[in-house]
Amino acid sequence: MSKDKEFTHLNVQGHGRMVDITEKGVTFRQATAQGKLRMQKETMQKIREGAMAKGDVLGVAQVAGVLGAKQTPSLIPMCHPLLLTGVDLNFSFLDENTLVIEATVKNSGQTGVEMEALTAVSIAALTVYDMCKAIDRGMEILQIRLLEKKGGKSGHYMRTEEE
Image (cartoon, rainbow, N blue to C red; front, top):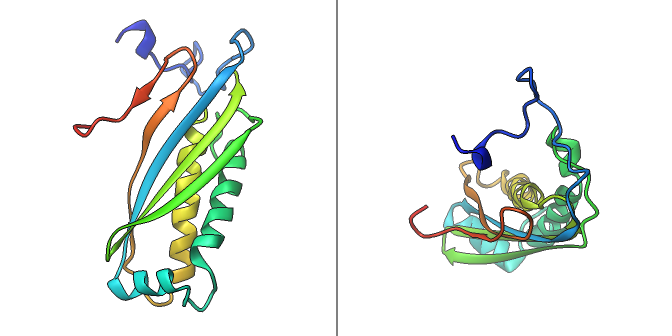
């Protein structure tokens, strides 16, 4: 394993640790993550029409995703608390059964925002599930993954179709 690919969250004893970023410079960071929810056609229709009994599913999921990004260090033990400068979520309909959630998170800091983007997508997806489970317990949350990251020492990453 090359030096660049070593696990950085382990101390000399092999125990977990928060990586020391004291000496890292402040740079612009951005990450975009995506996830999908597969559901019954009828469930998707109710979401699109705003007809779910619990209210505006995508509006609530939007707020939940932003809150999720902001709470990432409370949920993921080795994540640094970050001053996020932007969090946005977008929803689209891939087909009559699949909702796509994308989250983009930005900051200027010493470490990246990939975990915050992934958490935003995850919390938004779980919120959709929670708001729709009364009529569709078989929903599936699928393919939560990083699409792109910019900034930092490791540079630019963009997911390719082969990954």
